[in-house]
Amino acid sequence: MFELTRAFTNGRGDAFDRVWSDFALPALGFSAQAVRVPAADVLETADEIVVEVDLPGHKQEELQIKVDGDVLTIEAERKAERVQKGDSYHRSERILGKFARSFTLPANVDSTRTVAKYEAGVLQIHLPKREEAKPRSIKVDVK
Image 1 (cartoon, rainbow, N blue to C red):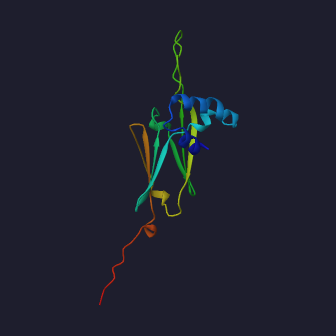
Image 2 (image 1 turned 90 degrees about the horizontal axis):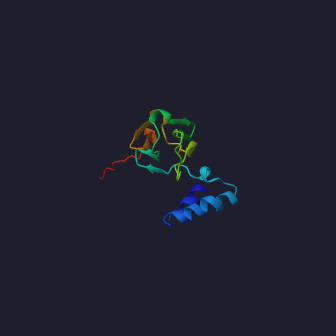
């Protein structure tokens, strides 16, 4: 549902996004918070799978990354900042609370060599492929 929602609303402007998230999603039984999960890219190279997730405003120590079997799960929580007495928001759109995002990994990933980096609000996870799964060139001798 999330991917469909993003594809359907991308590029159509803030007003359309608000109508979609405020009226259409609740009518379908989804909350806007449940659908607004961080955007992610998954890239496969010859040597590894790279997962990049946008997590602006999160602290590195708040991020939890785990691989269980063939499932990579990323969890984090963004807590509300304390508002001082007498202050009030005119608008509050930033997503708060916990989220979890899971990805099914291909069988050729060696999760024991996983490396994660977090820089400038982007979490980057490198999942190397098993040696036997990497493409190899075989030299053919011509006689």
